Image (cartoon, rainbow, N blue to C red):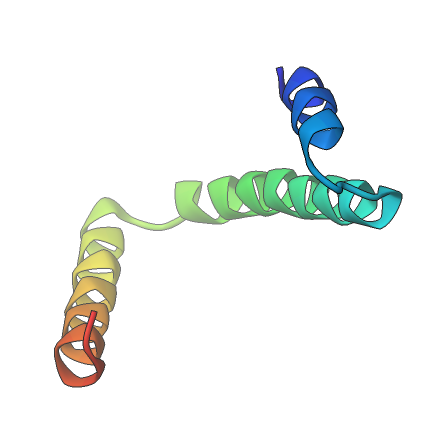
Amino acid sequence: MHIVKTAVYGSLTDLGWNDVLVGIAMGTAMVAGTFLANSLIRNVEKGKFRKYVAVLLLLVGVYMAVHGA
């Protein structure tokens, strides 16, 4: 699906090979990051994970309130 979208958007815009390569690199990094994070998260206790997510949400909320969203 993404290859078809790239072909269609590429024919309608000025999408160069450099953009395609950057997209492939970013997609590869996202897939690798997902597998790495999944393996790390499976080893964390549920309670600790919930607290970690709650703290991150609090920090992001405070940042957005201070700096504007």
